[in-house]
Amino acid sequence: MFNNSSIIARLAELPDKSSVPPSSTRKICGPEPILAKSLRSQASIDFEANALAPNALQQQQIQDATREAIADETLKAELQEEISLKESLTRAIHTPEEPRNPFAKIAQWAAARKAVQKMRIPAKWESHHVLSAIDRKDVEILMYIRDSAFELLLQDTGMHETPLKYAMRVQPDMAIILLGAFSRYINNLQDEDLGKESTRKTLLSLRADLHSAIRHGLATSQKDLVASFLQTLVMSEGDKWIVDNVAIVRKAIAAGPPGKPVRTAQNLVRKFAASALKNANSIAAVEDYIANAASDLLLMAAWAAAAKPLNASHISVWLYKDFLRSLSHKVDQVSSFARDDRVYRSFVECLNSHMGAIEQEVPFKLRKQLEVLREGMQGRRLSYKQKLEALARQLDAIQSAPTQPTL
Image (cartoon, rainbow, N blue to C red; front, top):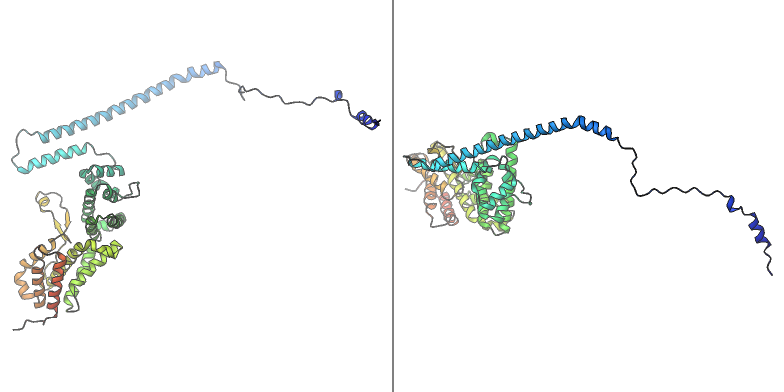
């Protein structure tokens, strides 16, 4: 038998559930949206619409009419320009009679080509125009870009490469065209241009692009382009590099047996090439250029030594396009340094024009050196490297000989 008195007493002490007020529960809102603020009345909306709609409609009509008028004027101007260009093209091609001057027909075709090109020249050149011209081998568009936006030829195309390296990868033939554009830019720089900060930055970018292209050409076995890159790199250094090195070789000519002018000229060019190639083993790829450049330094230095007693001018490395000059067009300078035998031909012209004075005014050893250079550098049977090897022996023998001939 169990004693439940303690349990009964505890239950008696608990409060009655009916006397406890029920807890207040929060009402759950339904899924329908609720407006935080009531909407405007329909009457207010109608009043504002009736007041503002006419003005808004009128403004929209005025804007539409203005845009249409501007579009019409632009279209008319473009059509008129296209019509005039086509008319000039037609006149240039279809002439009523053949011109008497044989060069007039060439001028007409040049005008026609210029009219056609003008029809597709954009208002502003961009990098994609350069790449497109390279892809299509469009030389004339590249020349337009060269004349009006040269810096685009040096800028990154967005593919981590410049137009020159892009051309080497896609269209190697166009790399030569770009080099020609670089050369023309360098040739046409004036003394006042060289003092400008923008010109110095452009030349620095050009040299950096050429250095990179040289390494890329050697890495991709495009060694035929490397010599052209070096030529343009020499031109970007300006006259100072050539003048300074000619002075060094001239001192070697006058120094006697220890001078060794041929070796001095070769070492000067080889040092410049090594700094550009960054690899001594790669110099073998440009041995022909090194020999050509060393030969020109030797010829220019020898004539510079003879020009002093003759009071004559030195050999200039700048030639002019006689055809353009005869037509009274703008003259472009062309560098003749390390370009086959151009400097040699200038050297021979100088000798021929001062033949009598050389016999009287120039010392005996120097006369012999001039004769050896004239005979040793002529012809194309031997390479420049072979000519320099033969000249080195002959010039060293002359420098070791007595000052006056034995009677």
